[in-house]
Structures are given as C-alpha cells and as structure tokens.
Length: 67
Image 1 (cartoon, helix red, strand yellow):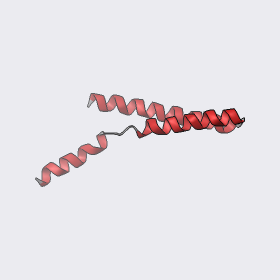
Image 2 (tube, helix red, strand yellow):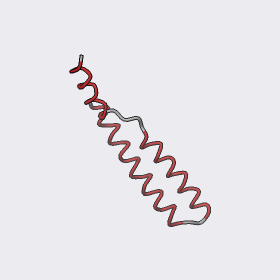
Image 3 (cartoon, helix red, strand yellow):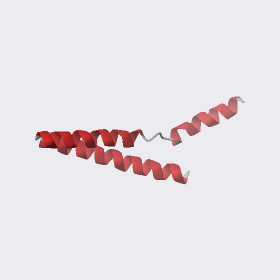
C-alpha cells in the first residue's frame, strides 16, 4: 500500500487545475481597466503577463492531454 501512495504522489504534478487560465483572465481584465483609465504602461505589461500565462496554459493542457 505504501508503494501505491508514492506512485500516486509522483503523478500529482502531472495534473494541473487551470490556474494559469484564471490568472491570465485576471491580468487581461486588469489590462482593459488600465487602458480605459489611460495607464498604457500598466496595460502593456498586464497584457504581456496574460499572454505568457495563456501560452503556459496551452502547453500544459496539451501535455496533460497527451499523457
């Protein structure tokens, strides 16, 4: 039974919950609000962070579908 638990614990990092997508949406909304207020620097940085999170989410989704 102990060996089964260690195998299951080793497989847990291969699963992800989609937090990257949630963070990407948060940064995207932040970028829209910042652009509406006129803070172009904050809007640009927020969009870049959101873009990176979406790319990481897509890569992890593909990897988890293949495994």
